[in-house]
Length: 130
Image (cartoon, rainbow, N blue to C red; front, top):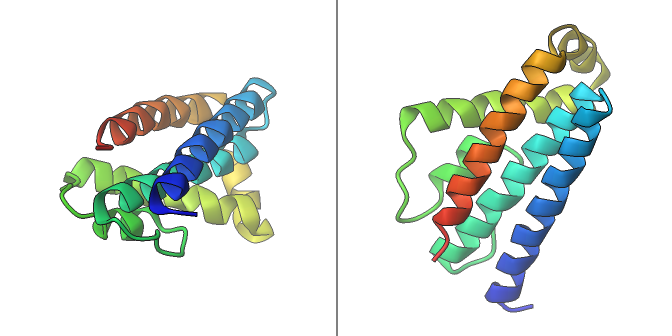
């Protein structure tokens, strides 16, 4: 695959993954929805990395780490803090001890709030593609 195809893959996969996050939220699967929200943003960041850096995306799941490697885009403090918060959804969705604690705070209000923030963030990230 060339870089344009890789970028397209990440964009399409991000959109599909966000649709899954929305479906899970609608079905009251809040923890799983937040896990897929994280994954969707990770994929869009990887698309943006490929787009801006003209190289394959880095491995890893830490959104701040991926964002910090993207050329030509300076993420503000609030965005980097949001990346840090959403990155925790990846861990909380995978590991039972974290998942148990996350279930206690991840209710409809929490998940809807982050889903809305995530949607705005995804739209902004996509607008940064050249």
